[in-house]
Image 1 (tube, rainbow, N blue to C red):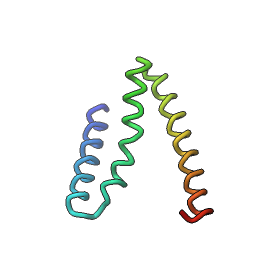
Image 2: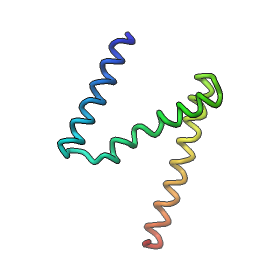
Image 3: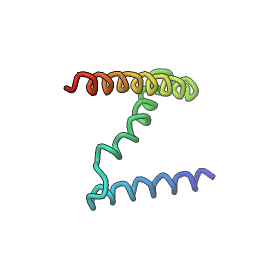
Image 4: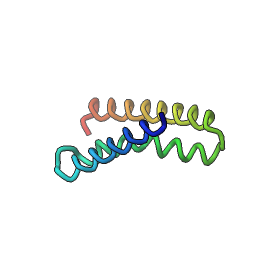
Length: 80
């Protein structure tokens, strides 16, 4: 089962790199998917437990989402 997950993950990474090279995708759109993995890695290093790291990742990601919603709302309201 873990082998299938690894094959799927590696194929997604490979096709993502191929799409960036061919210019089909913007690199920032694909790098957005890396942010939760980085947050998880940092929170795992801090907490040392997978479950705590997963919960911290969820909370931090939700907080970032709320901040980005406010920033986007302010940008459209005040047009800056």
